[in-house]
Amino acid sequence: MKTTIDLPEDLVTELKLRATLEKRRMKDVAAEALRAGLKAPGPSDDADLQRRLEILRSLKPVDEEQSKALADYLVEYREDRETLFDR
Image: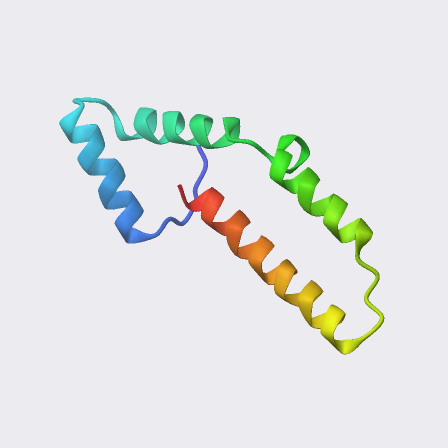
């Protein structure tokens, strides 16, 4: 099936290089990379996510310090998730 997506130039260059080095079609290299990424742990089966949810459930922000701790935690979580998907 054909589809069009916009990818960062450096990623396209990496795909082309890998396809050339492996003497494969770029679409096959891209499909393989997507399949591998989709097999990566997702939110529903991520043990770290479960641990973080338990921590969130135990937090009851009632003062500024606790609210800031929760905000910091959520920022860290977002950054961790972005890093996971950058691999």
